[in-house]
Amino acid sequence: MLLTAQLNTNGRISRQVSCLGLRSCVQGLVLVLMILTCVTSYAQNRTPNVCAAEFLRAFGLAYESSSEGSQASVTEEDFEWITPPEFAEMQRVTDALLTRFPPDTHIYVGLGRSPAPIMAMLEAKGIRGTHSLPLSSFRSHPESRNWWGYTWTYAGYAGRLRDSLVDKLFRHFAHFLPNIAQLGQKNLVIMDYSESGLSLASAHSYLREYYKAQGYDGNILQVAFNNPNFQLVAPMPHGSVIGLQQPRLIHKFQEAIFDDFAPFGGFDIAKQETRELKPNPRYCELVEHFRRLLTASRLPGE
Image 1 (cartoon, rainbow, N blue to C red):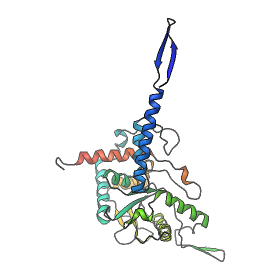
Image 2 (image 1 turned 135 degrees about the vertical axis):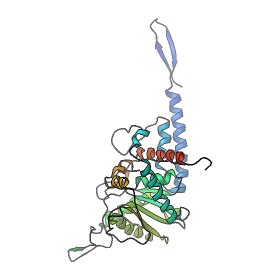
Image 3 (image 1 turned 60 degrees about the vertical axis):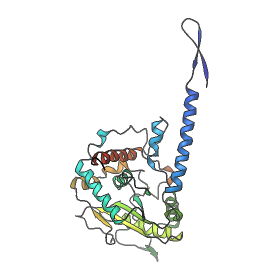
Image 4 (image 1 turned 90 degrees about the vertical axis):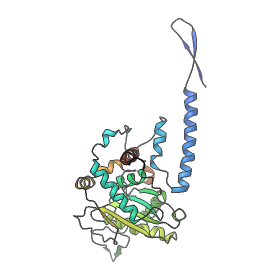
């Protein structure tokens, strides 16, 4: 501990024990515990759970958010706009997902910011093996080719990324996604809220290329949560579309209301670096809110 001398108003010197040393010791111990927690999580799920940030905030330690400046803690009042019917709908679609693609044989990846509430619901239900892949407005189709100065692409897509960007994209995948040893015999499910399916199909194509190069022989599946009134442009395999039925929830997805709660911010592969991304503490608050609602909705004895 550090001792500091202080002269009081009567001219006498009193000694005051500073809490600085004790606080430093406590913070050091907390950081060591966090490192051990993250190492364990890394070994099991590749990327530590974003919500481990709550552990840091509980001890008053610094935590960087995905946006500039400090984030105020989100309270229950901040979630009043999530109505009971909307919450029930999110339970329904996640249950449909888990029924079609059971967690004992699948690992789930949310593509970009749109599926934030779906990923939060999965975490709130205690589903392990969830990952988020920051990737925004991605329309590049890997099978596009340049012939004699002309770029041939599929309708609605941009051309194939140049080789340097493909390398960068694959490093981005390696940072956020499990490797083939961690996937084991499980299949990979990538998910997005989509009304065209273009970003999902583009990411799916590059992910197949990425994992094929590693020798992965499992399935990489797509799931689109969408408005049933819209016809997806990109064809999806049977059973890969889960339609939303709650109009107000559909509207909130369309207006990108949930983007502020995504685990990470938007990411443009051509303009940003992976190291610039920071976990978003608001996502952790959304997970905790869903956990409380799930607990409150359980019948006595369940």
